[in-house]
Figure 1 (cartoon, helix red, strand yellow):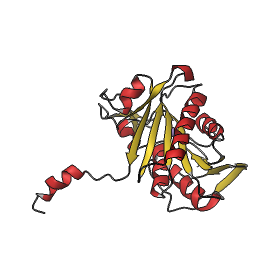
Figure 2: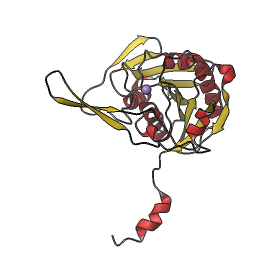
Figure 3: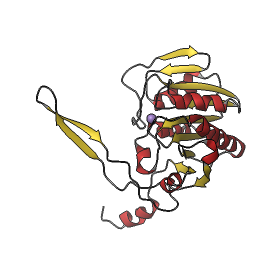
Length: 247
Ligand code: MN
């Protein structure tokens, strides 16, 4: 088996190292990841400047681009084989609910899915310093093994979130749906040393509706959350309603 690993926290992040290490149990692992943190770049693709890849050591490539760039570079250029699986993570911070639309981690898995390659995103649900990346990597390994054994439905990838706990305290995986934030965020505005205003996109404490069956509900109770996502954003129910308009 050939597995490509990427992330949005950058190639030197603790999460990607733990992930690559654990996935070696399944086969050959090649890491192609941004050369620096690119969190919250979403599904952006670099089209107006060249990209460069730097081989840091065997099987480790740093790219001066986004996670989506890395998937493209890896699959179309750097990897000697088309991978059997692309795993993105382990992100430092949960990717739950609406937040996945900003996520570079999730977007990398999306990009692989668009290329017809089975993919999953893995995130550790804390923004604090954590020593639980190896535990989360073992969760990722188990899920990856199942993806390789069973395949995934068409146009579908997995968004896996792992609670920030020692392995023995992690509750079993729940298959969840994408949750919903309960606030809209905020902007901090202040004045710089030269008297000009500046704005910084901030946030209150992340807060989600704690609805049963959601990714947030699972993480909040110490379970691994596994959400199958697909790339068809069509709202089929709404098609009937819009079809009734006089367009
Ligand atoms: Mn990140």
